[in-house]
Length: 161
Image (tube, rainbow, N blue to C red; front, side, top):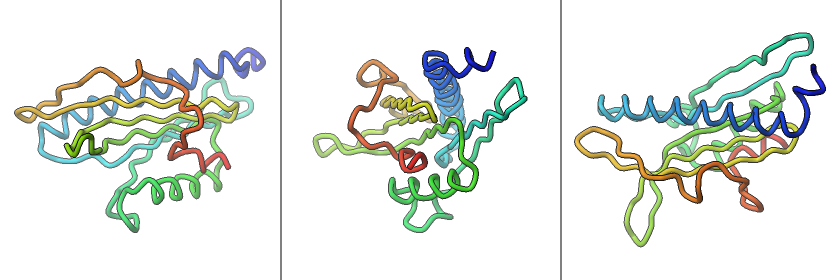
């Protein structure tokens, strides 16, 4: 059973499923936060496969931007996540955060998701959104949804050294 669970195809599909579940959860939380007039900190979900256990251990952490020096910059987030991962190396790690990017001198709200596992799977998604009357209006994910980021660096890459 472990050979099937740890096969490259199975690991990729598992990582994709875990990442998409976290991404969808964050979308719902973001909708509630916008309705309440509040913000959400970035979320990191850590997955540990334990020998002798049928199911993995999940731990979801909110990273308070105010608690990190320099706010939620990608460099600070990457370092904080890598530091955590060095103490307890994960089987899989995922990150979801909302950002405001500038496109043609106009601000654009984006939801960004990243996922990486020990087997080398690297996944990335960007979904635009806007807020109208305290409700989130979702755009279509850019580039078709979850994809391999190729040579582009992800925030969580440092956690896998």
